[in-house]
Image (cartoon, rainbow, N blue to C red):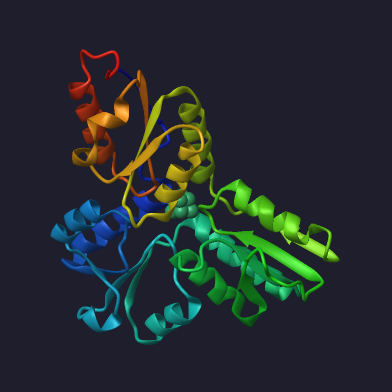
Length: 279
Ligand code: SF4
């Protein structure tokens, strides 16, 4: 069986940077607290815990006042509170996310009503809406147009289909439409490559946490082309997925460590070493 492994699958620049910053801080203070999982990957979070990076959802748990802002960024009100209460802040907001936050602020200052295109429950989106305040909202297909000047800022990890849909919704109904393309390079490279592989492979495996939005989106994109399976680890792989298959594509979300991808590829190699295809 031929295996096509994605070059751009796995932990992205922003998550890698956040982990490195956190490990350095944990080395210095023994324990640091991440507001929400540093990486949307259960196994990786367990490993980080052993190294002193604790996940919490409440400030009450943070006894030593050492807090990590993860790559998604946070609501500016919470940032203000952390500063006021004199927390030691390790700000690992991804520079791409920070750029999106700045564009939101800029658009507001220029009198635009800001539309965020993304998932309403995603922490990055919640943060962006925080920067937009009452002059911003999340895009929905049914939204009414009440403003003449609209500024669009997409979540960094959405795909172009979602952005295009929002642009088309407004383009002929407003006086001014300003779009900042904040979809990050890691997302673009990963998605393009996943599509290219899915077109030639018979089956696709997408590795990443079930709670990872970008892994789920990657799965959805691949599934349009070939039967695809979203897994967290090699033990979820089923032989029947590969009946008649002669090739498999392997990619991973932005929060999947390289070791987890290696594990899956090694498993596939061992399992299908001598078989051209599963009858
Ligand atoms: S997916 Fe992109 S924006 Fe998000 S953390 Fe990674 S590099 Fe940054």
